[in-house]
Image 1 (tube, rainbow over the protein chains, first blue to last red):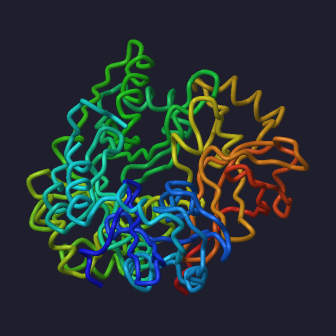
Image 2 (image 1 turned 180 degrees about the horizontal axis):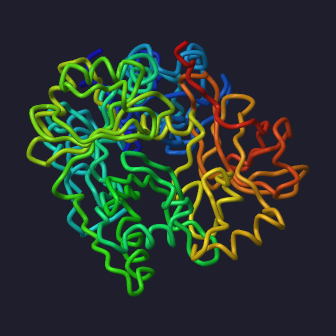
Length: 130
Length: 366
């Protein structure tokens, strides 16, 4: 996947939009590495409506529990069911087999509130030096 | 988390950063939380062997003609009965029986001992010993910074350690120690640990630390961090001071009565602990297994029919057993193994069952 098309939240979720206006959502490699072994992920169901930066779900690693936030508003059109039995896919490949949900965006302009890949990279390196 | 304060570094710090470990602040030290991944590290210790930098733990050398009687006053076990070269796990209590720390005491000879308290309690244990030494002649020397302590843990520990010493390791039975030549230097080697596996804890000079660590890596020992250590100790039903016990908890509540010999002349917590033993504790530490995928974390409330009956002190997923496990305190009448409880996980009551500790016990060699 061309990481240049990815947009990021400050909570470390990524989204990439296809031609039909459907966004594929997951968490960044940085987030997956920080969490460590993921053991449980709780995601919304198909048809659920999400708010931008509202709750998307929950993720639990061996060390800690974290909330997931939706990068955009819209309705859930598909959920990665394989994560319920194999949450470690998120550690193995958070950008491909570890994707979480597909969202039909209700407002494409919300993408402007997200960071580009290079902005996110800067954001992560700055937050690490603090 | 400590902020604005310089973190202490163990002599093995460069080994960790060279191996790509993630370093975090822990009890005032910069320590590796994980190397390859917590689950891989746990598996290595259960199936082969892992090495842990436990140099942050305190090393107090206690000597002098008053050493034995001071320790016997402060520790929960009979120090007079401890033979040279042997060790005992015990708790350090205040006068009320509250647990200041848990530690291992080793007798080196007639008048000298080694005490290993937890990193965050080392100073308070040393102070408590001084306060209770009275007129006795006793010297307490903190050698934590001059030495390293490496825990080599797992079924292959002895085979790996044999590569680096001529000491007859079979002679070091559990909770015994010897000082001898290993890794080309002088080393203190004890058959103790905090993982539920066979293994050794090795103390040697700070200068020789990195070299010895790398030699064990060459023998196949997998570097492990504090994350794996926490999972391993919880699977083995071992308590963590600061989580599962503190100064408001007594050893009977914590299920540590095996390590308490209260009825000794001069023991500081004698009266308090004899009274608690007689009346029985009102709450007890339990082990529990979660039903379902949610994990109970420290601080979650334990419920029964809507009534709060206790709280969780530790909780992790157990990769060895494939279930989510934890420990916590409940009212004594709900502590029987088999009791159904509910745990409030972020507002949702999740079913769990009280089980006998430990969760995991290694299979003994025949």
